Length: 166
Image (tube, rainbow, N blue to C red; front, side):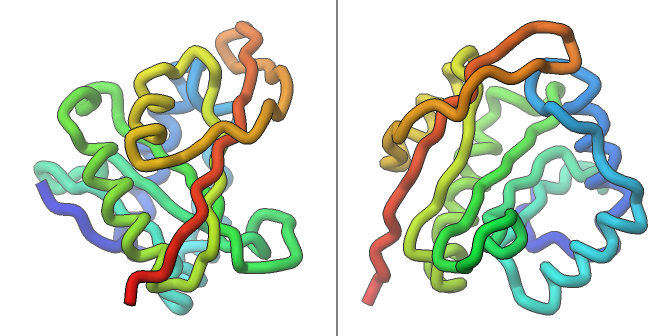
């Protein structure tokens, strides 16, 4: 297992991972955008060294995590990073998400984020417990969302203030 920064060579594998998790119908609301749009974002990530990592097993992208700056998420400041993570269903329960979260938290401090925010579905107790272990606190509800599976889900908001390590 290799954990490393994402690069444009990962485009196909990253898109495939996103599509696979979306197809489950219970974790992601949206399918991946067209590959050319992802490629533009990957180039920006590489140029700015934005915290985004992938896990490679047998030359396949099996998981990813990112902390996107606020300006990439409709905000006016880059002091807050927005976390997104996904692990292919065949590789869950192996501690991969924990290792990815460790990597993105460390790199988020380097990037200069003062806080990280995320949303997690109320039914995703495993992810909630992982985020809690890293110190994320609940800050409210985003509201109800409709998932591709047809089920309705409550989206919870969580936040983690980052202290700069000296």
